[in-house]
Image (cartoon, rainbow, N blue to C red; front, top):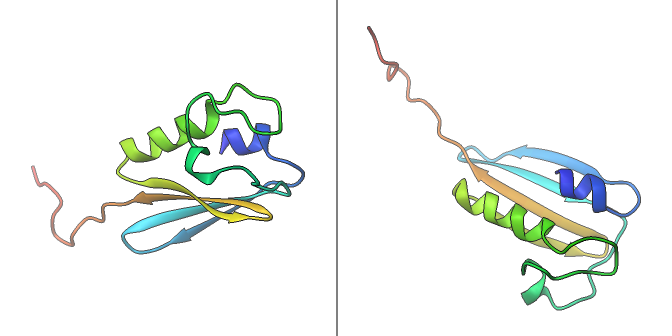
Length: 97
């Protein structure tokens, strides 16, 4: 989210959706993705704007470490979705003491 706030173009929008077994965070801005999508998340890849080329790579690594994923879901305007799995407690599964 921080990467989108700092490097997003124009208005950055964030929407969260509860998908029962996951939460999806959709991030859009007014930019476009015109480059090769297969390299979009590569470390060191720098797009048209200023930056070091680590933001999307680190964001994807963090998503994967949580068991989720980060993907490009739109090119014009630029849109990304972060999908994070959630664990729901079963009723009556609280540990008693």
